[in-house]
Image 1: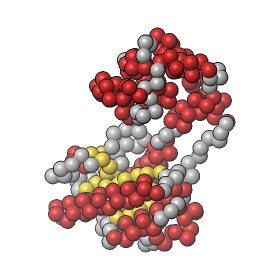
Image 2 (image 1 turned 90 degrees about the vertical axis):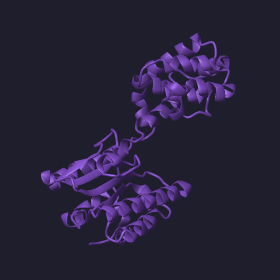
Image 3 (image 1 turned 90 degrees about the horizontal axis):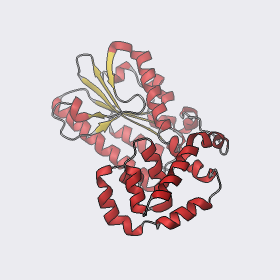
Image 4 (image 1 turned 180 degrees about the vertical axis):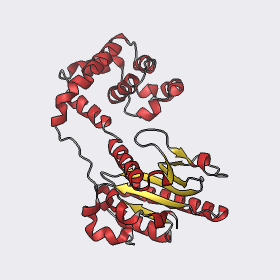
Amino acid sequence: MNSFRDYKNRASQYITFVDSEFYPDYLAQAPALYGSLLEKFAELVQTANSSANLLINITELNDPLRIQLLRIFRKYASPDTSVEMLKIKKNIPNIIKDYGNRFRDIQEVSEKFASRPKPDEALMAILMEYKDRGKKGYELTEAFFLWFEAHFGSEYLIQGPVRAGKDVLLNKVLQNWKSKTPADIFISRNDRTPLVVGFARYDTDRGGGQEDDRISGNRDKVTQILEYAETYKIPLKILFLNDGPGLTLGSMWNDYADLEDNGQGKVMVCTLKMLDERFTKDWLES
């Protein structure tokens, strides 16, 4: 069987391209999606007596409206804070205490918002980018699950979020696994013997420190999982389902090839287009 490294000279032939919309074409649908959202933000700004009060009022709303408004709040009032930070409701008082002195004054927020064109296509374009974040990764995992079911049917058990959803926690599926390690794919025999732990990622772009951190984190996963497999004498292997043009940037392809080589047959790096050639029953049961 060819290794991941063997495909490097033909890398572009084995990359899956998930379609993206062209700019500015997707702006045509933006007013229908975000027009009422911007009106709601304007209403909240007008009734707030401070930016901290604006944040509190946004936090009291339900999702998904709350998350969308937090994205706008961050742009206008608090670029220091991330949406991930702001969306945890119980943390809002501490965020206001720690970062509130850097919030833009509510009067200036109101003036800046009012000065923008109606509709504000620039802001809508930003919100559209958020809309599709993660979409390509979801399509990657969904394609794998469909492929697996078509090729192996009921021969094996497969778990994981097909698109969006909760990851598989290894401490829930592996006896005596201590940490809450998330995985995207978990395959076992029908008798529950673990066979494959899988991690999926679609890379549109990649480089620099992010690339180094990713590979380092993957090495740690390989070490921990293979040590566990050796300790408990089970045929557990690791799949890195990676795809997208980002794989061809920098040293990414070589780094993943090294990861697979060092796994001595128990680690596989694969794109969707390699599955038929590489992800075989022989490897699953090896």
